[in-house]
Length: 65
Image (cartoon, rainbow, N blue to C red; front, top):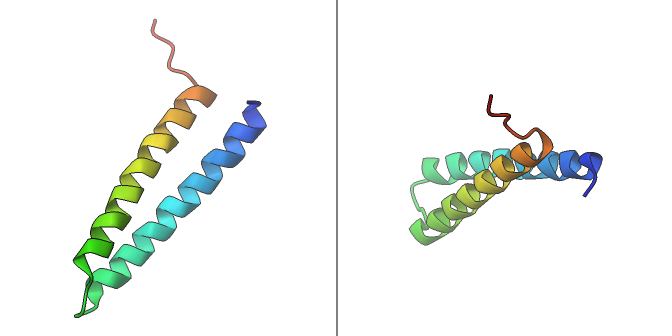
């Protein structure tokens, strides 16, 4: 993939990660909460975090000196 495509994909994943943060905050504020739904959202958020780290490393790999 080209660097531009990777950066665009990274931006999309970061936005989805932020959106999940907001959704989780709203869900946890409610009195009637679906714990299974929260677990699924948190799992998705962790998957996104791993993908974000992977893409960041692919765009700007660490150089070990």
